[in-house]
Length: 365
Ligand SMILES: [Zn+2]
Ligand SMILES: [Zn+2]
Image 1 (cartoon, rainbow, N blue to C red):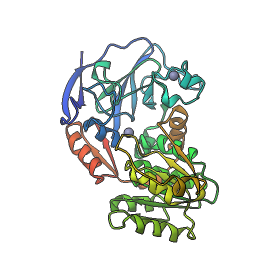
Image 2: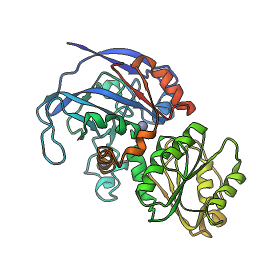
Image 3: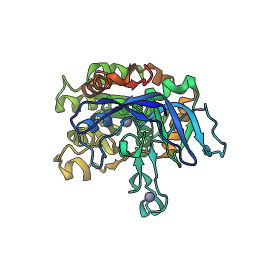
Image 4: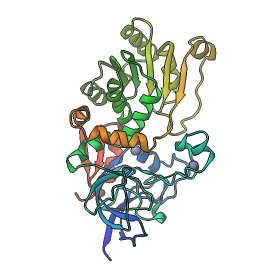
């Protein structure tokens, strides 16, 4: 049986190692997926730093990937009922095993909080099989939701990557109206996709506050009207800048995509009275933060919402946008950096420092 080269995080704080694993036997209605590109995102940095709960180390990271179905046993169908064939170009929803039978799924209709939910490359470990994209091949278990792509859409799709469905969910949940001024805090992949999607959603102007400068210039290339660097502007200077940009009122809607708890309070202060605040950047626990409930929230009559994960609908619609060359053009402005499996540690360092706008793993490089 042939071997598959993979990159593995053995334990929290340990460097990524290369390992060769056997090609798996396929169960009925499962597939082998040849990885063309996978991504390196902030989640992978958190995984290596041991900052996520419930992760079964050792694991193969890489939760959003594109490639081809190289072997299918039984059948796998798309949501229109058409069977996939060997050789088809696809991506697949990284979330698997959402039960559609529990209180979260059926009553609260918040399937992203389903306790049965598993995620390839995050909560599936090596003991579950070839379940991460930092590998030449992956095992797609029965019930994995594949979405058709084309080879020429792979690069644009991966420029959005896992940030795309997250940002799509955030932008919709933020309730942006036609003509709004939207402030995005954070210039990482989620922030950049929020800039592009907020404009698509009808915002007249999108402002972006973040760092470092290469991310802010990417935000401007993606359509942001103005940007501010947090490395050279303190809290007061940032507030003043936002007021100057918004007729002294504050943004209509602010989307927080930073990971810094203090940014949640800033998001409230940078938003106009009766505006909306959407929190999507607090994916890991970085501790508590204080705010003034009277001044920052109640008196401002703010709508503040959280946003956790994404579901098939966000992922599917993100893929359809990327299949449209005109509508997805803004993502082709984002600079991609490719790394082979043996360079996974360099890729993680580039993402952790913010040096890379978007880092991808090419397992056949
Ligand atoms: Zn459920
Ligand atoms: Zn990710």
